[in-house]
Length: 528
Ligand code: C2O
Ligand code: CU
Image (tube, rainbow, N blue to C red):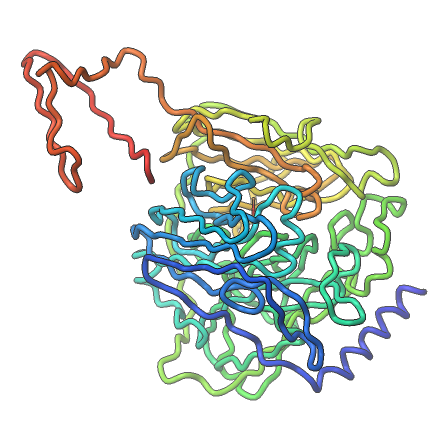
């Protein structure tokens, strides 16, 4: 009964403030091959009359959207102007461990980190955010994060909306807790305000045609059940790391922290209508953060959780005000998009099993901390050493009472099984986050650990619920370089092999003087 009253009062509240809707902020863009990113200790106005302390990247809250072209070599100048050390991780991008920006790649205050890498990723939306050990939630919640949109030749040839800010919009969905003076509070259970691109109570004039939205759940813990008012259907065209084979018609899209989805909405003929983008969290079964019951069974709860009006409720994320179409609108939904070719189980080199466990048993189990295979994250422990080029299947078993969004760096994976069953069509694309349901349920994925190896530098895998990550629900792996056993080192004094020119930029000549040798040459790029 108390719950019903709370939901009702929140409805009245949103009805009264709906007059003060705010135009959706669209992050600025940056393109080219050199990106200067200044992480700022700054302030923003979320509510008129209140100044909120924030972090931003070249901005007052969040950062610019970086447009990258597949195949380009880019250089990042990440200037940490915070009072605190931080890191910046390129979530979803396939880069070397040294450039990945995990917790070891610290950027002390007033210093610049300058990773350089080649863009090898498929067209999709990725993001950048801090990853400092035990501080990720705080730094990300304050706003030091932004989007990356990769373009490639496959995506470019499709008849899809792609004019940023006109028919192609990023939507960064976050829940937030503000105190009475509208300061950001890192109180995980009281995140009752919805922000889209940092805008409270946002509306967007959307042309009456096919419009593309790129969704990111950048919330610390909350899972959304995204849908359109009136059960209007939409089409998912992309997952975390690329396009799906074909658009998938949906009325609901579950989006866990860290996950992205690209959707097309056909607003044709709807000029003048107002359509809300919603989260239908009342439809969530138990044991998902955002459901009425966050755990399996009513006994499992989180302090402050029941008082939060968003939990188990249907609520608005933002509003689309449909306006006249643009001069060259996209009016059709394509029938095919790309061809995903997951690695086959027959090509497997190794399997690993990761079991999520609560530290505490009983009714407080759900409050964390959580462990993976009985261990907490340790900066000095490498949990797995993976041979270069391995194709592996990882089984994620969730023996805790709540679903956890598992994320792995370095690779994009394909889900092969959810509790023994193939994934639904909209989860069959390239992924780097997957929500693993609780109570002993499991998910399997297949991935290839290719391109980069490093005996020292590591990549992370972790829960993307940021308090869980900060509390140690994380591990690290490195990719071991191929052995050089049986390969004679080149004696520079001998004339057996001559390599020239040295250094070389686009062409290198190997000259062997002894004629009867059969040689096998493998080139490794140690820089990128
Ligand atoms: Cu988006 Cu390791 O994180
Ligand atoms: Cu978790």
